[in-house]
Image (cartoon, rainbow, N blue to C red; front, side, top):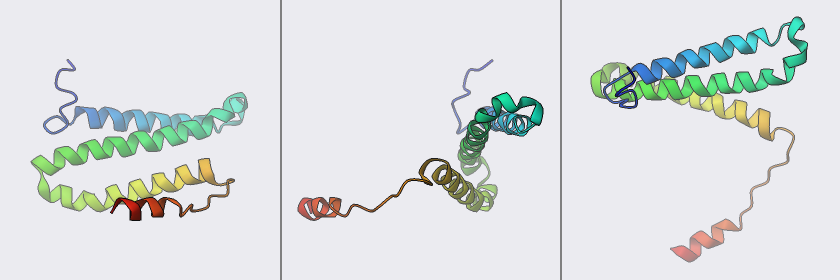
Length: 116
């Protein structure tokens, strides 16, 4: 039943399963916002993050399939893949690094000059 599921070049089932799981987590995100489930509200952001991640990974896997079997659709969807990665990066930034002060440490550039 699941043989060849990780052959994303020739089989699109994994991308469909990942996308469906992401959609299911998005539904859980919506349900956990209900007042009746206030006791589980602390899991809501985790469900939203996991939803976005599963949908982006599923979309990435489907892009591999499209690259080999439908190049025209691949070129059309390529920009949306970039947009989805960008949105995921913004979500991760605001959930994880919003309250921290992040400064660029330029000391690693001296190592690059030394290596070249």
